[in-house]
Image 1 (tube, rainbow, N blue to C red):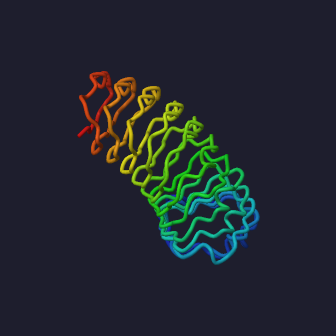
Image 2 (tube, helix red, strand yellow):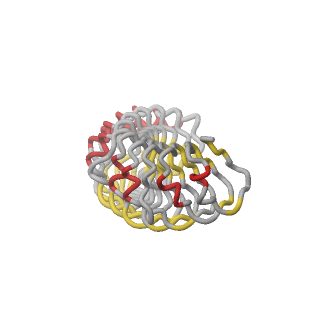
Image 3 (spheres, rainbow, N blue to C red):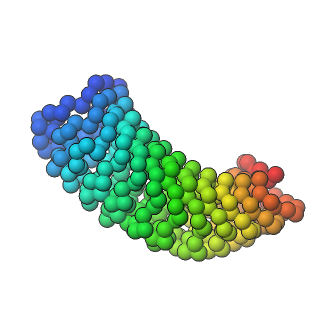
Amino acid sequence: VTGIELSDLRLSGTIPNELVILVPHLKTLNVFENGLTGTIPVTLYSSSSLVNLNMGSNKLSGSIDEIEWTTYNIEKLNLANNEFSGPIPGSIGSLTNLVELDLSHNDFRGSMPLEMFNLPDLYSLNLQHNSLHGSLPITLTTSLEYLNLYSNRVGGKLPAALYNVTNLVTLSLESNKISGTLSQLLGNLHNLEELLLGRNQITGTVPNTISKLSNLKILDLSINIFRGSIPGEIGNMGLMEKLIVNQNLFSGSIPSEIGMLTNLLMIKLNSNSLEGSIPSEIGQLTRLEYMTLE
């Protein structure tokens, strides 16, 4: 036996510690979406054969840092939607085969281990809805396609290395304490489809290189301290579906180029210092469902 698939079966109770001893060549353990309680069995931390561990959406608790992680062959680790607490162990940064790591929707606290952001093949890192603090590290693996830190306590400025992660498709940093400005290097992230920076403390102007993000579908800069005008270059972002820049300090007029965004479903420009009339070109947005301008 190399795989155990027990997802969504309404199972309860704990995972036996003897599991790895009884199934020594276990590669996949999937107990996703049950009612399992207790902690992670100690033997799982050192299982040399384990490749895919999915314990998401249970009621598991306790800390995961009391024993060093030495599951060196593991590629996918999902502990999301549980009740884990305490710090994220730095030893996870030694699991160099990891491609997906999901620790979201728990109560992890403390600073984020920098090693975790430099795993060479990691393409998906989801830490949303925890109580993590610290700042993004100055080096980041360029393999990342999905980075989600939504709703934590992450502060500091966006590191220059972030603009070199050109494979990024989703960058979600909303509801943190990130400060500083956006660099002109933002245009390097040409694969981005979702840029979500709302509810932070980011200042300065929006760089006109944002127009290079031609694949962008959702832009959320709301509830920050952005100033200056909304760049007319956004008219080049033809796939845009949601433009959310409310509650900033934007000034000047609403750019008529917004009328070129024919896929727009939502525009939120309210609570800025915009002036002038509403451009008639907005009337060309036939797919528009929701708009706030006041």
